[in-house]
Image 1 (cartoon, one colour):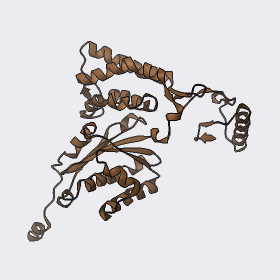
Image 2 (image 1 turned 30 degrees about the horizontal axis):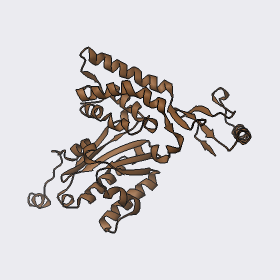
Image 3 (image 1 turned 90 degrees about the horizontal axis):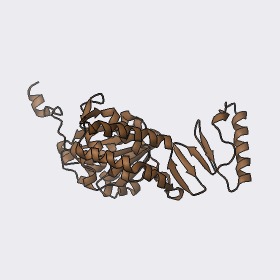
Image 4 (image 1 turned 180 degrees about the horizontal axis):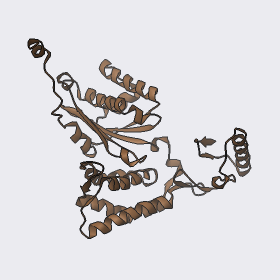
Length: 315
């Protein structure tokens, strides 16, 4: 099996001799196609331990670890944050905090769900920013999360994760948290791709007609509007969608007998096909989706219009 990206790749086979053969075939074909190979960065001889995509793959013991340079980079920022808070500093740059959260998220394949559980208060602090260039106040609970990572990050990485437990569902480019209330919809995106995308938010209000639709309709339509709005951002990526409505993941998987819901699900799927978006949906408890819930209840006071009857009378 061979996995190839534009500038990187990995191959495997059943034994050493076959690995050598596959390696030489790939090298020969790349050179014949005119590619300039950076041989100093290549490993053409089979190895049971190598670094790839920011992880150390050890097939001898069947585990994956985050590369040590990434751990050290994150720990350096964490130590700086702790040192500053110890002398009474309460405000930090939004981008700086987001970079720490983003780096932790990028390790989720190895670290696991503890990343989500122990960055929630940091997220809340980042959400309180006035702008990406402005400072935010770090709360006591967020400081506790930072102390947790200062103690636990290296230990968790030393334990690693079994290769057999990793599948394509663990590898996502963007995570989307969304929610719908009786007045509107809202949510946010997170990603380790770049700090600018961390905590990108969107919210809106329902019309009077839409408010009368079922809660499942509103939740599904919320997903639809996010996918439609961010289709360029999502293009060619895997997006994991978190919703606190248990019907939404099922409908997006198999459809619905209710035509209104089926129409929305079809629209979402079509957008995904057009923009080559791979979506994964997962139910999340309401208490773990509080910020999206808050955004869904935000009222846009500039979202108003004159009723058509009144407009006609005053023409």
